[in-house]
Length: 149
Image 1: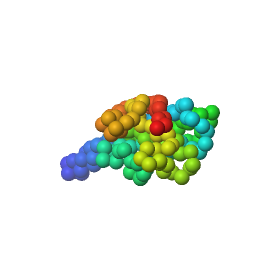
Image 2: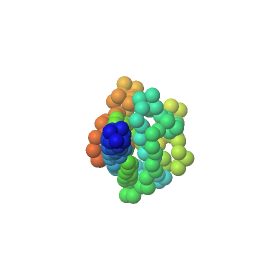
Image 3: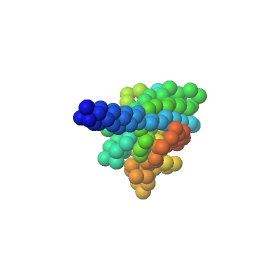
Image 4: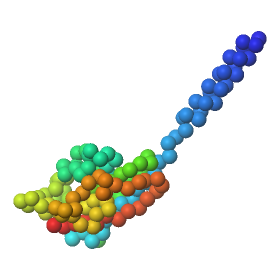
């Protein structure tokens, strides 16, 4: 009889402990807004990164998540949902010709680009995950400046 009670108590402890481990991870929403686009042609590609080795990503292939936003009156906004807490960086393209890649001149992009935490870019101010990243610990809204070179 004592063995049965011990087995039942052990079973109850296991069930209780496993119920704590199955708690759903809390997730957050990240809203990204761009304004002052030079025109309303095409779409805006919003790429979200969560790894330093993936950013910057000129060909938009190493992203964690990607959304495409419509342009209304020179602005676009998207919301990434169900994101776990962590460190993220954003790379944005005003994809005027809707081909999913940066249209370039000789070296510089002809379409607008933007990165979280950047107001300008240049040879001495190149994007990196360390500079562009931010912590997501609650629902958050950020604005990213689109830069035309």
